[in-house]
Image (cartoon, rainbow over all chains, first blue to last red; front, side, top):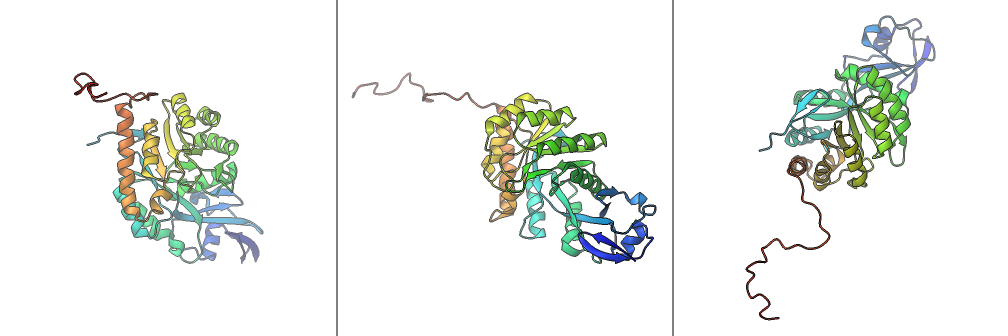
Amino acid sequence: MIEVIVNGTRTSIPNGLTVKETIKALEYKGKGFSLALNGTFVAIATYETTMVKDNDSLEILAPVQGG
Amino acid sequence: MNDDTWKIGGKILSSRLLIGSALYPSPANMEDAIKISKAQIVTVSLRRQAAGDTHSKGGNQFWDIIKSLEIEVLPNTAGSHSAKEAITTARMAREVFGTNWVKLEVIGDQYNLQPDPFETVKAAEVLIKEGFEVFPYTTDDLVVAKRLADVGCKILMPWGSMIGSGKGLMNPDNLTAIRKQFPDLQLVVDAGIGKPSHATQAMELGYDGVLLNSAIALAQDPVKMADAFRVAVEAGRLGYEAGTMKERAFASPSTPTIGTPFWHQFD
């Protein structure tokens, strides 16, 4: 297991996962969100080729009201 | 009947009111207010999504309503305090919202939410090179406006006053200077509008549009206020197009003086 920070909260996930596998492991469902890894945008097209490492920080954002 | 249209971000629109989607008493109220405002651009944002439930924090319900309105969405980068944060947020927004439009908002001071001009210019330059249509939220500083134009911004959104303050146009002369300096850019007053008359004033200055949120959402009756702002923006634009009279230093009678009855008879 490795530790990652997801939306500011530290959590454990199995080692050696891609972004796509990490999203599934974290139980994020459906579409309509976007992801940044260590402050850098990760496009959906690269979810399967981008690996998540120990101490990585993920931001998973969805549409909300804004001014 | 107002058949006025304008072009912004490659789209031809008939409404010059840009409306925010936050702070309404309910999603239904927001939907009704946006509809009656006849706004064709609505601002949206991105925030952290909780795991396990795509409907948590109203995320998807909100987005479903916005999509059903079939108007342009303008994602903001609210909450960003650096060019890097704003650039990442813009890239994320482009994927989620499916638009290259972005309301670039980089805050430089947490107390008055004043934009950071240095980071805003830096982010605008990068995003424009990546194909974004940047709507930069800025102050009414003419030199900052110049720098944003220099890096390729076709739209400028100077503040009327501080975000959410409702104080109206603090420096109309500064806004006028920007208008005169950039006759070919699309100019939108963004932030600080509190009353319909403020929006009218901005339009009378020759601004192409007005962006506001709190003034409608925090009104006692947001739907009625949205309608009021629709009328106010139209009135201001018509007034600008009609050309206002020159201000005079002294009184000047409008009723003819020739033929005045009882001319000095009882002095």
